Length: 411
Image 1 (cartoon, rainbow, N blue to C red):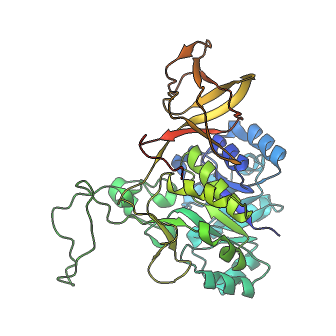
Image 2: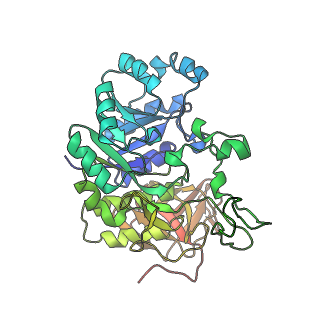
Image 3: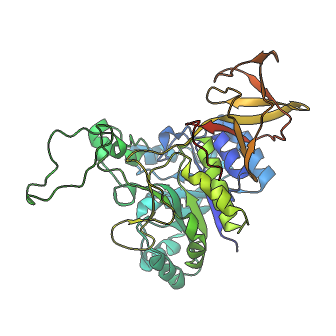
């Protein structure tokens, strides 16, 4: 069985993008019970178009119910069986074992996947979850490749999934109280404020009382520093090793990231998995989408996080972002005119287009049109607009431009 590429879907547009750009499956949250409460998620009125998209593509859809359930949450979900049943989910992702009886009773034909929040890291735990009715384990991010292989060898009938790209948490498997402490928003209830990535100004040296003279390594960037933020995970150069270790699914983090992020990261891993001859060309975009310095996480070690020197470039202490996501191409309205989904202001100069199998397309003959089909100098978010060009665009292509016009990734 081919290894699955699993992409994030923070809302319907991201779901459609994930499927278009090469994902075999996507994970999404309903409005309640998801650890990405602020991702947009999927309200009940979108059931119809989600079902239609799934039927048209034949791809899989997993529902995240991975918050830590309080009593009120458990009581609430008991009343929602009919609503949940109307969604075309293939499986549910949970961390709270108390949900198992509810899911097995109401959805016996659908899979149950153990969330990474449960921190499953050994074969005895895998066996226990299998016996409880779980069909897949999403391993804790602390699992190494050797750990994964040994777990798969011990329990070959269990599907194993791991995060291979995206943001990582400084807390053990994401179970953090920092957001709740500093912002009154619980990450374990789906409302993380990402306090580990805030910028802090230091007034005193960071020294632990019992370890005088030993200082926490801190570097400031433009007067501010992040002291708890981890690097981002990137295993693009190691997909064969991940597959050989026994993983059934490679998971991309990012339900709160942009459509552009979902598109370029999904297609880069798709090309790597497919051994596409031009896979390296698609890989380049991983360094131009918003990210922190890349790492291979714990995959090659059970100790400190390893820096992935083979995929990393010199970075600042904050996010790198070389491109601005401007929008996407909608339906064709005439021979060379296309509707535009405008996300940021679009001007005709310096525009680039990318597609599922098009690494880069530039056009010199671009005319921007307003809703009355009159030529305009710019298109703004919140308005209807069109692009006219002789270049072979297609619905779903991403529109971008370099954030620094003097920079170029063309080699």
